Amino acid sequence: MAVKLFDSELKVMDALWRRGDMTAKQLSDILKDETGWNMNTTYTVIKKCVAKGAIERMEPNFRCRALITKEDAQDAETDELIGKLYDGCADKLFAALLDRRKLSGVEIARLKALVAELDEVGK
Image 1 (cartoon, rainbow, N blue to C red):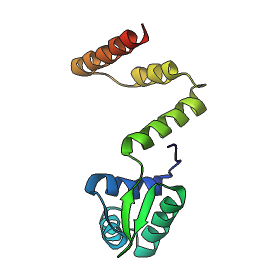
Image 2: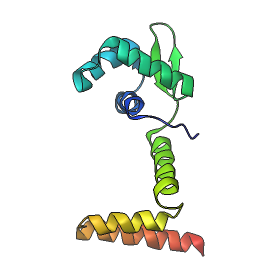
Image 3: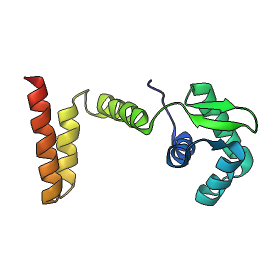
């Protein structure tokens, strides 16, 4: 399910992904501490997430449940980034990331293993 989430919506979703189902009031309290948002701001963002199908609103007490996983959101954001900035070519994104950061031996080994796994799947 590809849902475009804005930064504010991702903050709400992140709280749900980290802590599980909770009431809108509980979300508001968490986001007040983490971002300084007031209750109205949090409720407005929750309602936008509900309208997009990212959150399910349940009664009683306006309980919120994430309907998409963090991995789904990451996949959608990655696909959009690759499409917008890298002409739809994942290898261009990968090359750009490697050009900008020194990788540890462990990170390099993990990347090699991922590439080898992808290579095996493609055969």
